[in-house]
Amino acid sequence: MTDFPEPAPLASHGPAKVIAMCNQKGGVGKTTTTISLAGALAEYGRKVLVVDFDPQGGLTAGLGMMSHEGDTIYELLIGTARDIRQVIKPTKVEGIHLIPANIDLSAAEVQLINEVARENILASVLKPILDEYDVIFIDCQPSLGLLTVNALTAAHGVLIPLACEYFALRGVALLLDTIEKVTARTNPIIQIDGIIPTMYDPRTLHSKEVLDTLHHNLGDKVLNSVIHRTVKFPDSTIAGAPITTFAPDHAAAHAYRALARELIARGKIA
Ligand SMILES: Nc1ncnc2c1ncn2[C@@H]1O[C@H](COP(=O)(O)OP(=O)(O)OP(=O)(O)O)[C@@H](O)[C@H]1O
Ligand SMILES: [Mg+2]
Image 1: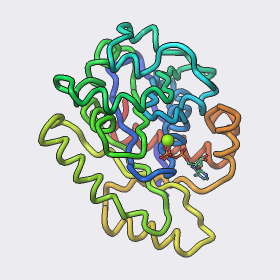
Image 2: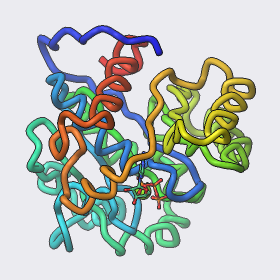
Image 3: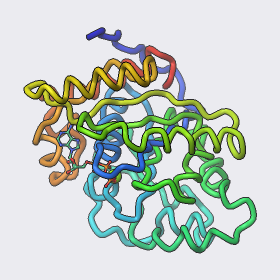
Image 4: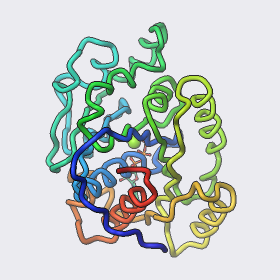
């Protein structure tokens, strides 16, 4: 596996690269990748904002904010909260800020249907703070509905975590098709920044087969950094901290640092 160089520190911050973490298949590592990559990038001195865009609130909980009270991404979307800076919360990890979500967000999908320019609402919400961060991750829910289309419309790039399991590729065509439609209709500049193989188990033949198939079908879209399956991730979720601070010396933390270096070296993130 290629190793990518240690990134130089940034002399100044922003404007942010906005990246949607997207796969309509559930449980493939979107939220874990959002938290862990944010942790690794923060270690490299990047200012990171993570946006919980899933009514299940897994990102919010995974950063240690259980049962969030107060305004969330939902109030920003429907316009009852107007100052995004009051909704952004610092986290226990220096360099990572969070826009939380809770179950209220599940109503937004229906409520926004009749809005003018309904696909562009998240993009407008994020606009005032773009200059304050180096990267903004939007952790999508496992669906291709209006919220996810909002995330894709607000984003410069998409990262697609993909679990190395049977049927991993099932559904990818539909996701790529959705991204193509977004490119044509609401966001001509969006790029696929990469597919991240997750839950790789080197002890099984089928993990290797899935990875080979991925490379064969999706070629250079597949990133070099592969995230192995380990129970450290569920543990760090329970602890409410990124793997990079929960188990900084574990191979899983190193894997996400390698992914951060790869994305910087490839020019996907500053
Ligand atoms: N590399 C990994 N090895 C083992 N377990 C993992 C790994 N990555 C994530 N997990 C665990 O798998 C479960 C699903 O991961 P995660 O919540 O990140 O997926 P998701 O794609 O965000 O799911 P959803 O679609 O429901 O939002 C979690 O319990 C998480 O701790
Ligand atoms: Mg999730």
